[in-house]
Image 1: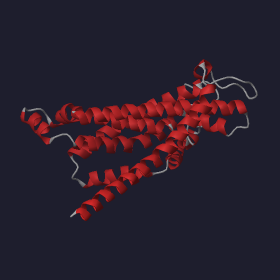
Image 2: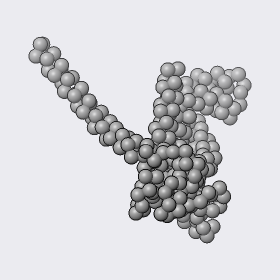
Image 3: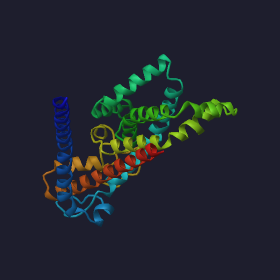
Image 4: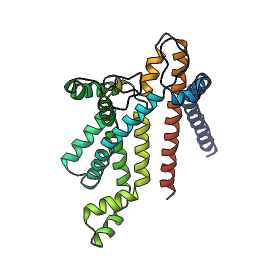
Length: 280
C-alpha cells in the first residue's frame, strides 16, 4: 500500500516537473522576443514616429504614421466585411447545426483557418487586384476579411453553443419570434465570448504581412484612398527591416514594438472578457 502511494507521489512530482518544463519552454522564448524588441525599439520611439511619414532615403528621422493609419483603415474595412458574415454564419451553425450545409460550412471554415495567409493573399490578388488592374487598400481589407471570417465564425459558434437551451425555450414560450430570440437572447448571452473571438481575430490580422504584399502593396506617403495602394505597419516593418539603411532598421524595430504592444493589449483584453464570462 505504501509502495503504491509512494509511486503515485513520485509520478505526480514527475508530471509536475514535466508541466513546469513545458511552461518554461513556451514562456522563455516569448520573454526573450519581447525583451529584445523592447530593447531595440524603445530608443527609436518618439512623437515623430506617430505623426510623420518615413523620411526620404538618406535623411534621418521620420515615422510610420501613414502605416498605422493604413492598418487601421484596412482592419476597419476587414471588420465591416468579416464580422457580419462570421457572426451570422455562427448563428446559422448554432441554431441549424444538424444539416449537411452546416457540416460543409464548418469544414470550409476549418480548412480556410489553416490555409497559409500568403495563399489567401494570392487568391485576393486573383479575384480583385487583377480585375481592378491595380493594388488597393480595398483588396487588402478583403484579404484580411478572408482570414478573419473563419476565426470569428468558429469561436462565435462555440460560444453560442454554451448558452443554455432553457433561455431559448423561455423566450419562445413568451411568444418572441425565433429570429429575435437568436439575436436578442442567445447572441446577447454569449456577447463576452463573441467579443473575445473578435479581438483575437483582430489581433491575428493586425500582424499579417504576406496577404498585403499581394493586395495593398504599400505606400511611402499618406494613403487614405482605399482604391489606391495603401501603407500598412507590417508592410513597412518588413520593407524597412530588409533595407540597407541603419535609420530604417531602427524604425522597423520601433514599428515591431508598437505592433507587438497592440497585439499584446488585444490578447489581454480578450482574456479579460473570457474570464468575465467564466465568472458569470
